Length: 215
Ligand code: GRF
Image (cartoon, rainbow, N blue to C red):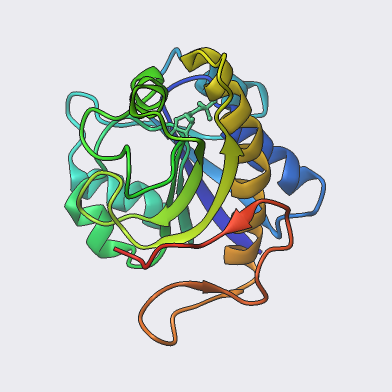
């Protein structure tokens, strides 16, 4: 059984979806640690309600080395970023190669990178006139929204969409996609044979595709 550290800053709906998948036995793992920069956020409250250990980061007095130590002490196998708004320190990225996932609420490499978070992502998608949006799960490297893509799911952009309606449509799909990808990660079903991640077997959810070459 793999041990997961969830990194959160906000509502934690992806965290809750993943935790539910753990409780349902869909993910063969356990949430061993929740790392947050916002100790009062709803996601942190959910962790407290479920007696999951919280590790505040970054806060005064904590260094990247102390975060690596907390992850090691918790015997964490995989780091799952779920709405975490801070950059993961490069020391952590180096300590956990191919073991850190993030979800982004758009079809990377478009609408990603510094400044593309929350409502801003969906505003930019609508302003672009794109007919499709979606979500991307990717491995994390030392740059925002940059590591190799594992899977994407698409949703249509409707003519009457606001950033809020589009965000809600994407978020619903994020929960399905992220739980499935984390489940695959925990059962060792992501292979890197050619140096890029592939789900073996591929996910069978509707709307799933991987159209782009990994970055
Ligand atoms: C999601 O849209 C996710 O893609 C992005 O931040 C949002 C987090 O939402 N990285 P939640 O906290 O999981 O509800």
